[in-house]
Length: 207
Image (cartoon, rainbow, N blue to C red):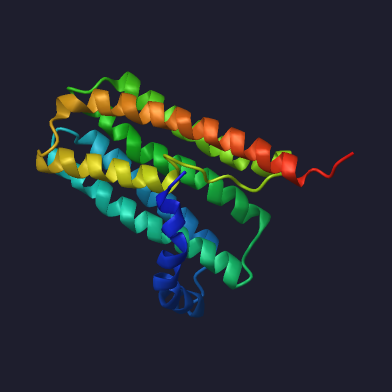
């Protein structure tokens, strides 16, 4: 299933000089991970608290792009500079889920939007990532299957934020769009489970 995640190697190549400079200055992968999560939560709270000022939703696509870069940077620091750790693995997965939720939930504060579908999409995004993390538990790799993986969601919610901020996206369309997002997340969940099972079966030696 095509996914923006497949562009990650090219994105990493662009970021490598910056990663090398950060490492030279003593920046660690865990520091980047925690900083990205903290800013995501603070930005989400800001947008939610002042959701009546629609222009603030423009911060979501701007930060989504920067957060994708930070996610790539922390992974490169960990892998390429010997900073991988058990704590880092926990932080990487937990902070991503926290940050995603913090940046999706502010849409529920819009008066014309049903909070139900925003919450459903948020919960499904958490479950999708849990299914991805379960891959190693069944003998498969960590699953990143689409069509609505982490990078794809960042793009989609970035577009929604930009549409709300600029007025180009009618707010009364958002309920329908969140229903569609929820359906795509269920599809993604099914893909991750199916592909995880298939990979685990391939990795299991015949009896």
